[in-house]
Amino acid sequence: MRTPQVFLLPDKPVESLDAYIAGGGGEALKQALTMPREQIIAEVKKSGLRGRGGAGFPTGLKWAGVAHDPCPTKYLVCNGSEGEPGSFKDHMLMRKNPYQLLEGIAIGAYAIQAKKAFLGIKASSQKEVRAVRRAIAEMLEGNVLGPTPIELVLGPEDYLFGEEKALLEVIEGRDPMPREADNPPYVDGLFVTDPTEPNPTVVNNVETLSNIPHIVQRGAGWFRTIGTPDSPGTMIFTVCEDVRRPGVYELPMGTSLRTLVYDYAGGPPAGQQFKGFLSGVANRVVLPSRLDTPLNFNSLHAIGSGLGSGGFIAYDNTACMVRVAHMFATFLWLESCNQCSSCKVGTNQSMTYLEKLMEGRRDGTDIDFVIEGAMMAPHGNRCYLPVEHSLSCPSIVGSFSGEFIAHYGRGCQDCRSLVLPKIHDFDEDKHTFTYSPGRITP
Ligand SMILES: Cc1cc2nc3c(=O)[nH]c(=O)nc-3n(C[C@H](O)[C@H](O)[C@H](O)COP(=O)(O)O)c2cc1C
Ligand code: SF4
Image (cartoon, rainbow, N blue to C red; front, side):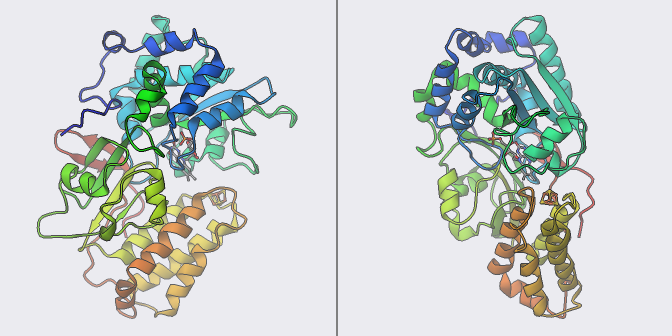
């Protein structure tokens, strides 16, 4: 099932530059190169495009901030790491249409007058790396990649590779440890040697930049005819775990969660009911009573959760929410870099006491320690990772308190085992995801 308003994710992969150009690709960059840079940025601002990497930050505003900075050296970075559990849309975009992404990067780099652009992808994302490498070679040969050099940077498996300050570290040749900087990359960017020359750097997600050629070519007015006033355009949603048709679905913003998980993802397995949905590991749980919420940034925020990167992990009534909370806490603790006490002590404390609950070793006071650990962020944390834990963990405990109480002194006796959906591959015909072999299978 496809709605007529979608335009980012093709049914079949675009196999060659010739095929891309035959379908109208490349025209947006040609057009952009004849436009004043300010006009491109103004069009992106007018379109209302908001970042698809998690926070929904207005893209035009980020570009304008960097473009107007007096520092003469600027960079653009495309974040293709996609390590969020339950999300696979950037992988699909890179596999199915790397040309569209590269055209978006080229337009963005030109608009902000970047000295150079970088695209960071995990080295293990082999299909995506192959597709992007081939597209770069073809586009360079066809002279349709614009004037800014674009470098592909292959990065590590770490979740933190996607955190923007850690991503800059990787591009500079170091480990993905978020740098101690009060400011985001659009203020303090790449390769800074002199604090008076902060090299402001735009970091944008793959899906965000894939929208750019369409906005430039068809205009902000067209873009705003799709989606909602606060979240124009489409979003590519991933749905995994307890649904009949796991998959990656592009839908206009504002489509309800019910439509996504029932009409597209097929509803819960036969005989079961939904229990909760998590948009990655970074937001509060969404309960089935909220199924009619429109999927746009403000509506998800209004119900106390967030859209994240559009990946929804669905759990039905057979899933143990103590295990879910423990699995998420374990992931966030293992993936933290141990530089700050909010992760080293806080997330660790939640994880330890959740484990005791699962084992039935302790009692109700443990819940207080779980929450206390989660609430150590945001205090003294260099990055947002433990804030994710402070949102997801207490919300799971609070929404399913009866289940947590039932585990006191008893533990998980016949609870089904769970695997964290760190997605590595997707079979579109069979509608099945393959998960990365993980360390987290409580
Ligand atoms: C722990 C952590 C992991 C992240 N992983 C990703 C990621 O894989 N891809 C991504 O685009 N953004 C990720 N982000 C968000 C980025 O830091 C950044 O906000 C985003 O790339 C900006 O792009 P946008 O404005 O186009 O959304 C992550 C953030 C955190 C805190
Ligand atoms: S908050 Fe956690 S993940 Fe972020 S830099 Fe500190 S220790 Fe590392």
